[in-house]
Length: 615
Image (tube, rainbow, N blue to C red; front, side):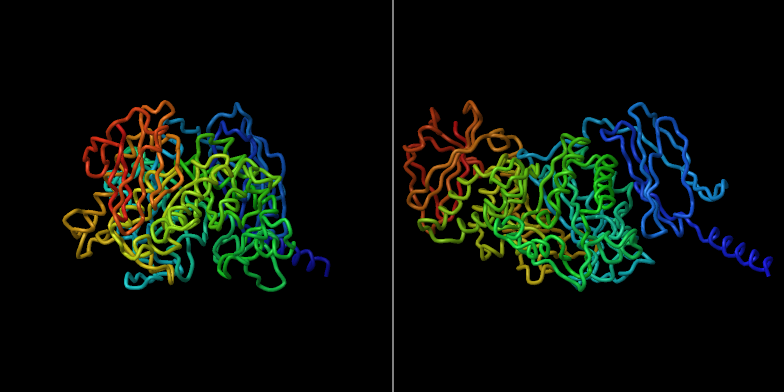
C-alpha cells in the first residue's frame, strides 16, 4: 500500500512538472542606463510559480520573487546598476535544482540619436488619424487568421476596413506638404476583440502592434520615416482600461487586477465628483472605478503591480521607437495619485517627451483642475503639462455660429482665452475643432465654407498646440451619431477607390480650395516665430469684431488676427491697437498675399478671419 501511494505521488508530481510552461515575459527586453535602476518582470506561464527563477549577470540583481494569487504568474524585481553593460543573459526557472525552462533576456544600449523624442510644442501642428480608416498599404494583412474579428467590410462603419501602418507611411509626404509637423494615430496596439476592434482603445496585448496594422519593426520604421521628414510622432495610450479578451484579463494575476464590483457597474462619465469639494465618496468611486463599457475592464490603479506594468510599458514604447509625445486617453477617469507618479517616472527617463491628457470637460477651471501647478487650489499637483482644450473648441464654435451678445458670439472666445490665468502653461494645451469621438467640424458649421476658413484661421493662430482631424482639409463631414459616421475612409487610401483625394486631380474645386487654404496657413505657421512661440495680446471685441495679436518678445515679428463672425462686412478702426501695432505701417494678408498699404482702417469681409503679418 505504501509503495502504491508513493507511486501515485510520483505520478502527480511528474504531471505538475510537465504542465509548467513559459508563455511570456514582459517587458521582453530593457535598456541599461535608465534613470530608474529597478525593473519588474511579469512572467506568465502555466504553473510557473512552482519554479524558482535564477539569473547571473554582472550588474543585475534579482532582489525579490513575488508570488501572487494565480500560480500562472511570477513578478520578478530586478535592480540594474548604472555600470551594467548591454548584453543577453539567461533567466532560468528551476525545480529541485534542475533547470526546467529558460528565457534569454536582453539589455540594450539606449539610442541617443538627436532626432529622437523631440517634444511636441506650440510650434507644431498635429494631424490625428485612425489607421484603419486612413490608407491601406498592405492588402496581405487585411484579414489575419486566428483573430476574433475576421470580417472585412468597408461598407460597414463597425468592421475593419483594412487601413494600416504601411498605408500611413506612404502618405507621410502628403502630410508634410500639407504643413503638418506631428502625426497622432489612435492606438495601434493589438485589439483582438470580437466586434468593432478597429478603434484601438480595447487593448488585448500591450506589447504588440495589431497584426492587421503591421509589426513592431514596421511601427519603428514608421517613426523613423516620419522623423526623416521632420514629422514628430504622438502615441495614443490608455491607462484606464483594456479589452475584455486581453490575455491577462482572461487569466488575471490577482482578483484586484481590475476594479471589482458586486454587480457590473459602469462609470457615471461625470467628471464633477472628482473635483467637487462636496462630493460623496460613492459618486467619486463610481466615476473612477466604474467600467467604461462592459467590454473594457477597468484597471485597478491602486494595485502596485498594475502601476508598474503600465508605467514600464509606456517607457518601453518611448525608448523602443523614439516617440515624441503621448496622448493620455480618458485622463479624468484615472487614479490621480498614480497618474502623478506615472508622469514623474516618465519625465525622469524622457525629459523632452511631451504629454497631454484627454479631458473633455466643460469649463476652463475644470480643465485646469487636471493640469500641473495646483493653480486652482486643488491641493494636489498632477504635474500634467497640458490637456485637450475642449473649452477653447466650444468657444470657437460659439464665435463662428453664435450671435454676438454680452457673453456670446466672439465674446465667448475672448472671455475663454482671458481665463488662461488658470493654467500653468496654457500654450501646452492641445486645441482642436473635432476628433474621432465628435461631429466633424464642417458639419458643425452647417457646411459654411466661409466659416470653415474662419475657424481654421483661428485654430492655426491661437495659443496652444493645434490639432486637425484627418479629412478636415478636404471638407469631410458627418455627425457623430453614431461615432462610426465620423470615422469614414479617406477617399484614395485604398487601391480600389474610384477617386483619390490625396491628389489635387481627385479633389473637387472646393476641396482643393479648402486644402490649399489649410496648406498655406499651416506652412506659414511653420516658419512664423510669432505663431509658433510668440506671446498673445487680445482686445475686448467691439462692434462684433474680435482682434488679437501674436508677437515675439521684441515685436520684431507680429501677426494680427481679426475675427468678424457677422453676416456683413465691417471696417475696423485700428487706432486702439497702438501698443500692438507699434511702428508698423502696412501688412500682408497671409492667405492672399495681398498687401495692405495702411493700417488705420482695415476692411474685414463678412464671416472672415483675417491673418495679417505686420510690416
